[in-house]
Image (cartoon, rainbow, N blue to C red):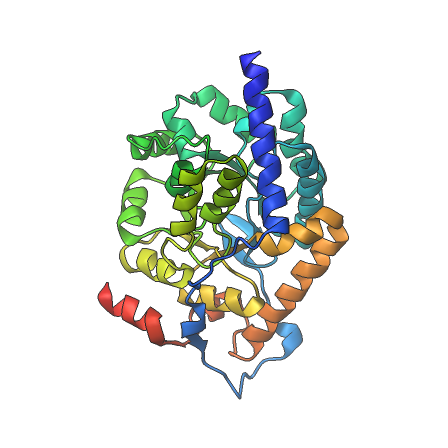
Length: 359
């Protein structure tokens, strides 16, 4: 009975994690990614043909058609099966990477596991990233169960997500983080796939990145401030449950975190760890700016959720548009390859310049 009740609560939370971002404005209110303070230098003499541009990239010993990640969104509920299936079909067709939502729910039953496993069924050759929370590692998740998460989607890597702010505001949150770093180091040494540590919208600082590099993780997904605020999502959930203290906390911390562009600069300033940039990425120009700042891969989630509810074709159409914008950005900066783009010149102004100077 207790197990069934817990499973029901998790499914409800997962369902609300889809419905609220679709229905409510949970984007950052008064903060931005600070990518608007990055200007790529226009090249009026690119000396390349548009059809020569190669968006392919290599990341964690895997080749992708573009530096694009369909970032973690969902799983664990009925509607997630369709969403993950459509996202995975698009990833397979386009030759890009995809992450699934936190998989703890998938350990509770074969039926729920299917909401994640659909990703590998629809994307037999795509690079898929499994997902578990740092707080769940502290809760005693065994190595056997971690391996089961990887096997669930035959994952090429596993992401450990850090969400301390969300855990505090979430009505049923588990804000237990004492010892998470040691657990991350343990997983990194025991698992035979790359370990990626990711935030969920508050960014990663240089201090945290340094610790993670020492811990042996393969990459970080900075997931900076400027896009979906999970403090905002939990604000709506807490309000619905009449937990007004939690709701007020969510409202106060709605815009908390390190902006995406600043987080790239923070991590790049002190480590050599590969960076996935995400958090408020909306266009191909945003992707180009992130690559120029030092990211290896760029993740997008929220803009893909509405099309994923409809069909895989809608997702492909949306991503194709963004990749066309990226390719155009490469052309007008004279970047034949993504390597050229990473070496392209940019100018930093405004608040981001102030942030960089303060490092």
